[in-house]
Length: 238
Image (cartoon, rainbow, N blue to C red; front, side, top):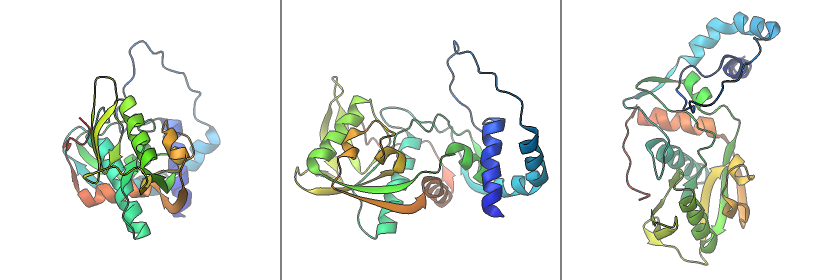
């Protein structure tokens, strides 16, 4: 019953629109006009709405500040990349050097208040899973320079500066200078590993391990462990 209710909730999100978050929309954009809800789907939702609302209202954490994605780094970017890296290491039982994910799937931000399971389904509605790739040092340096060219992206385990030409300078991975021929484990999403994000360096890996855990579950567990979420960054990208 639970998977069916969760599937219905995803349908509800896409038919109702995201109401629990705020999105940035350019003023000149003309909003799309969507058709009214399908009567059959609406009937299915009505039959389970009470149980679904109860399930999705489960509290995950308390948001203390407005939390956004941004460049060169941001609190949400840091948290999602830290979450992926940490969980991948726990699942593998091995140290993972870098965590990275594109922010193109996260055009949302949190406002102060309760963070619920339902909101997490809106935050990450896609069924992606965690992937760990093995890259040599050359490719890791290339990856970080791709992040720098973008002006920053959610990344964990790395510290560097972006110069005036959008090049990465002073790159440190786990507080150490990159060794060109050393092998590094990089945790990311299946979407990024499959070419969905603009990180071409990830596509030329030496090994790939797909973990049977959804990105959404990773974020739910990580935010629940934090309990209270504040707008605090650590200067990993400067």
